[in-house]
Length: 218
Image (cartoon, rainbow, N blue to C red; front, side, top):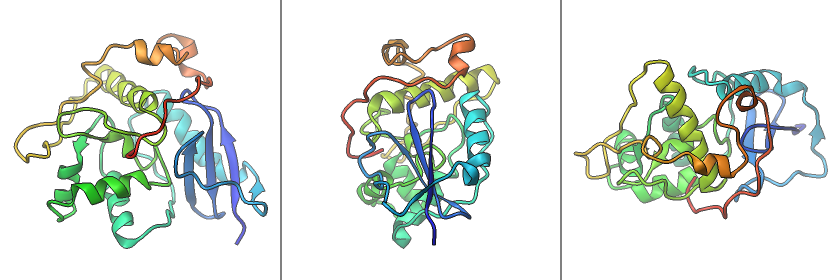
């Protein structure tokens, strides 16, 4: 089976998309910890990615619709279960690792959920960036914490403009809400990356500077 790939420019840097010709199998930021290296037999071809490119452009424009793409991530049954649960998180929603474990019917498996989250091969579309620490802290992110902060800030800003309420997941204690970590955050982090935060430039695909050292959990 032929493996296709292409690179898209985005407000958070280069995104490498990978496909088997029928479904998306990977989406990696540059320097992502667990990115599959490009194989010598891979075929560079933007053709299989036209719809993914269109939907990603809409996301960066602030459209809050869920991604609707055929996906075929490779992993264990447990990992695929975690990744499927991630896809139920809505635009602007954040939950803790423990809460995600509870939704999977695996209370107490927060650490295992975190490890599966870290191995998510289709970042952004499978929104591992929407999982935060019990106190609302960003914790780690394989693509760098500045990217995670940018993505959550982007979603928070457009959710607010659309009049949507921020959705808070229950904290790892099971009783308290996980506050959206970026609603309270200052904006200079995004600006320090060279990412525009307003005006026409904010809607164009610009490269950002080098990411922070990746964390253990995306």
